[in-house]
Structures are given as structure tokens and as C-alpha cells.
Image (cartoon, rainbow, N blue to C red; front, side):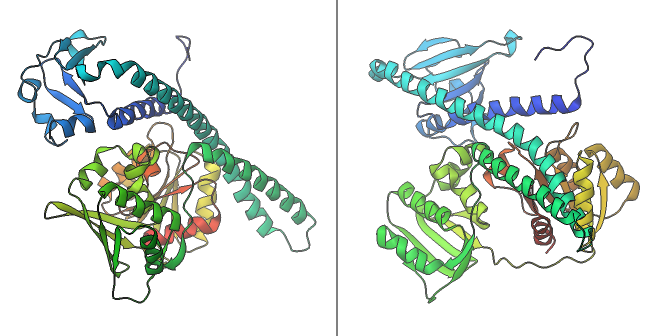
Length: 450
């Protein structure tokens, strides 16, 4: 990716390059986190920087304690010098500034030294497979981002033109053929989406108690108690079943489920380390690593809120199902930010027909300038995730500081943002993938402003 000295890098290229670098960093951090071998990163003077799960468990430490500890305090027999020190190996990470170099601390007990080659070969094969999968996902994501923007313009304005044509116009059939062509492209895009992101949940209403009775019949370790004859909830049944089975196997002991209402479903008897185990992995790993790490994403994809509470050395997981109440918003003020003019205009037209007051901005800087000039109290920010200069995430943080309590709707053809992919977005924030139908946009806005 060499450029001549006279070439000025466009801000869009710089933003995309930085996002790729950040994605690579998170990818290797996630591999390190789940590695079964204890590993830690140490400053040259001995101060701990980070450590993976295996190291924290071996040394009986919490991730919040690590920053205040040093190598001599945790492992007095291991000096902060590169080399082999008993069962511990210290490797130097060489950088351009030698004084800023860090040390990698790896536990390599002599008892298993003979097994190291086989384990290393297996880990190398796994890493190569994961790297190939990640490269495919990144390429698919970049293509999706651009293609879905174009599809959004074609299909959105196609619907606008079709609605404006007289019923007897011979052009209506021509426009329908154009829209049918975009539908075929959307189908191809959906296939590509399967490479770039996990499948979307299918939320349907069902009887939660009948569902849990069926699960407990197959898994005797799940004990259900409820005074209710039935309870209808809306969620992805397969995702929910995966959550319950994962937690049951994680606990390795009976788990009690008490159902009182949609807002009060409690799983008790879970290990006391549940909260720490869920938080230790990064959001990106929660999606890609599967098992316990995927539980938060699976729940929030079904719009099930959750929290972990400590109970006498154990943990309880509290679930609250959405009642799916949708209320049309009054004349709220909405700010739409997207570097694609066609998409901004389309979103404005759709929302103005619903009675909303809509303003547009072509960039994050323009949006902040608009807020400062007008001083208006906007109720909702709709922003693309990938924009030149200031990206959507940064803009949302700045706008939230200026307008506390504002709701945020991110839109994008593709994003590798960890929180978006995991489903763990803050309250008052949602994500709508492009291309989307007019009704999906209106529904997302109404839900945020309800």
C-alpha cells in the first residue's frame, strides 16, 4: 500500500486503515485471552500490563487488581529479565524504542516440556484457520459496506419513484423490474453477510414455561419453579436454548430457574466467578469464541436484558424479557449524519412523513457545528458507523456530552465494532444494518423514542 511522497491520503482511507489495525489487535488479544497457558505482559521495570484468564486463575488474581501489582510481588523468584527462570519464560518484545519494550511472561512447566511440540503444532493449525476465516470476514465486510450503501440508494429511491408514479403509468412496471433486480442483489449480499457477521436472530412469541419444561426434561440438572400456568415472551428460541444449556454445563451442577414474570426470570446456583468470566473476554471474543463468552450477545440479540448478582459465594443471573411495546413518537427532533448524501436525504424523507423534524449533516464535524449553532435539543442521533474523519462511535460520544440523554441509532452496511457485533450496546442505543426497509427504520426510531 505504498503511496508517493506527493500523495495525500484521503481521510476515508486513513479511517479504514486504522479500523483494520484495531481489528487485528483485538483478534490477537482474544486468542491470548482464551489460551489455556498462563501468559502475562510485563513492563521492563516489572509492572504488570495485562494477563490472560489462565494466568489470573493460576495466581488467584482479579483483572482489576493487576495494574497495581509488579512481577517481584507476584512471582518473587522471577526477575524482570529476559530468559528462563524455572517454569517461567520471559521474552522481550523489541520495539523502535528499546526502553519502551515490554516482556512476555509465559508459564512453561518442565513436566510438560515433551508435549510442547504437538500442542504448538495444533495451536499453529488453529491460528492459521482462524486467520483465514478472519481475512474472509474482513474482505466480505468491506465489500458489504460499499455495496449496501449503493443498494440503499437504489432501492430507497426506487420505492420513492414508484409511489410517485400515477397508477396507470407504463413506467411503474419498469420501476418494479429495477426493484426486483435490487432484490436479487440483496439476496447475494445476504449470502456474503454470512461470512462477515453472525446470523441475525429470529424472534417469535412462545410460551417460556413450556419451553423451559421441555429443556429440563432433556437436562435434569435444570430445575424449574413457577406459580404461573404459562408466560408468553418474544425471543429467538434457539439462542435462548443455547444460553440455558451453556450455563448448565458451565455450572457443572444443578441450576434453579424461577419464573415470576417477564421481568423476573432468575437462574441461581451459578459459580461465583460468572460475572468475571463474562467480562474477561472482549466483546469481539464474545461473538466469535462461542460457549460462555457468547451468552451476552445471544441474550441481547433477543432483546433480553441481564445482570449478574452475587449470592453467598454463588451467582444468580437475572433476565428481563422485552414486552415489545412500540409507541409512535410525537414530533421529535432527529439529526441524521451520513457521508452518503443519497442515504441522508432518503432517511429524512421517510422520517418526515412520520411527523418527525429532521436535520442533516454530512460529517461528524458538521453535526457538532450544527448542534453548537442551533442549540436545539435533539431527541435522536442517526449516524453511519464508518465515515471519513470522525467515525460514528466518536461522534455519538461527543453528542452525548453536549446533549445528555440523547438516543443513538447507528446505521451501516458493515461494522467490525466489537460492541455492535456482540449486541452489548448501551441503553438508548441501537444498530440498524443497511440496506433496510422504510418500515424497519421507522420501527427502530419508534422503539428508541418510546
